[in-house]
Length: 72
Image (cartoon, rainbow, N blue to C red; front, top):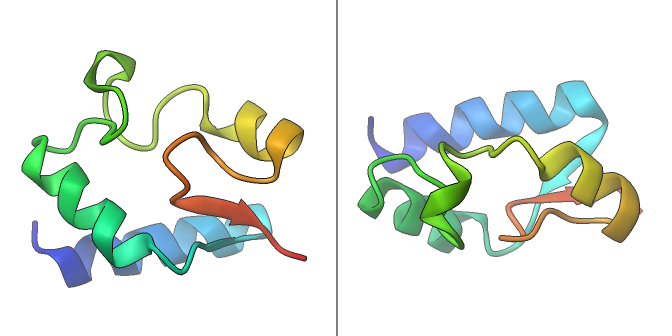
């Protein structure tokens, strides 16, 4: 999967959740792809988006790696 395809999927997913991608999305997605699709901030979390991202956006306004952020 290339960066643009991943970004498009991430945008659709974020929109469905009522979120948006962060301004750093391109950089984060590149890191994610370098980690073979695993969470770029902590590969032990599994594939991105990890299982903790929804809770993190609800509690902090963004996920740990800052790919998904709540709309302001």
